[in-house]
Length: 525
Image (cartoon, rainbow, N blue to C red):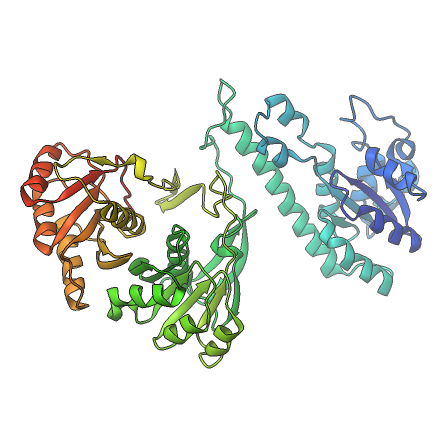
């Protein structure tokens, strides 16, 4: 029996070839507007929907497919005699294949200067209605909402003359997913629109669009279940765009730690290496080569580095691979690996190698491969905030002590501040010579974090004399500053903003320490 296909697409990618193949298979082609013109201009016999329904398009095309001859052809069940009889009585032709993609609402509202009128005119009505009708009646209709589906459907039609139940159901699920995404985008935009025409980052209703990447073996602990989801349109250079080259399946904790490592290492322009353990950097360094950067980072805390997550922002070569292979590592990630490096890790079959292209960069978080927002689950709710994408510039620094920092100290302070942004609060980071010397993380007391950082440095045999120190938030009392000075620090970077800033500045002057304020903090809970 000859099939009827209705083709009505905004994005015309692949539609002409798809229509040609359908025609060659004996399909009757129905279409609308620009799609119909494209097919006719290329010599394909196509019937306009208006001719098919006997009802003209009207209201600037707003009303064209909302007609019983369209929805009856999509919704009629072939297994119900009364449906078949109704079709015959009212001259309704069955529609077996529907190819529809929707007005480009998401792309429209993403453009700078988009007006409410522009947005409203790009809300599709007839398209989603047809898609829902076809998807509901999946046992009889194949509904296509993405050009990537055309090839597999054609292959089945050529092979068996029809699509399988499994294919039609999968297409139906994909169709309902697409409608949900589309409606969510409309809801997000309209409920974020402010009276002055601006768009809030926090809509009155938040509709997330996430796609499952994979089920995980278990969650943070073995009695928990888990899965990894990605954004509908992930940012280039973000973790979920990576490709695993070898090794065991990534676990929940692997993924969480890998994300911390990748976000940190992307922050450096020079060749860098970051070693993460339990979501905290336990060693970070920059150097002339990846191998040298790794050697320096490893020195910070060799004990914690055991079983850690390692990230590079440069291609991993054979020299770096040989060094990393000497330790137990869970995940190794980089923009690329040389053939020699891959050969080294062939013997380490359980090591997970993850290749992620660095983002090309730009002015937006998406272009930088970063999240625009962060989300934390609370009881029956979500905390949503703009992501901490603040990157300090040297011009932002305010020297508050009598002693002025040297150019080298400024470089060390900037490095320490970058690392501190990725350390759990309360965070204290000692650095020097382009490497971390001691890291204190996650303590209830800033003084305790300072002491732990100093202990870590001592255990690693690293001297803190002349080091630079970053504190992710202000020192509330001078006691933290005194502990830093006692450990050997020569300069400090901190946000400032405490009611006791004068007391802390006086302590720094008394101890002969240069101190700069950033004016921003980097809490990371």
